Amino acid sequence: MSGSSSIKTRRLLLRTLQREDAPRIAELGGDWDVASMTARMPYPYTEAAAHQWIDAIDPGERIYGIELQGELIGVTGFTPDPDEPSAEIGYWLGKTYWGKGYATEAAQAVIDQCFAREGFFRLTCGHFADNPASARVITKLGFERTGSGEWWCEARRLEIAAVRYEMNKPVPRWRRFVRLGRTT
Image (cartoon, rainbow, N blue to C red; front, side, top):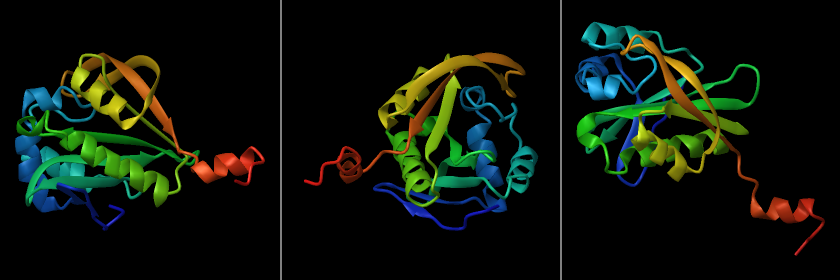
């Protein structure tokens, strides 16, 4: 797994996942309400499945455990697009931690990393259409809706209506003026 650095936010620590995280990931992801809102998480989500997932993280992906006061509460990260300087971000939290702003805080830290340190120019993300909480997080982060379609949901074992979003790297204010021919 690539990326051993951690990211500190106001309340959270985003850090590289370890094999030792598998029991906690299985515990949090083993909740139907969590697993059924992700594309790749099976249900039931066993510790063996969590180990298998951690071991199979692609070297290009950056996946972080989200810690609150030393306790793993979820996962976030990004997967680069091999054909262009863009990436898809994702996140999930244990149900106990929903509605407290942690997903927004963690995802914003990943967005900042993607634009400032990874050199991406565009980010994408999405959610299942029946997940209004994730829609609120994505909208708060500043993503714009680009369309809809269907995604496979491993937990539900079928294609589910989904909504797609994207965000372009913000242009610094001074560059907008330079581009317009202004110097003041």
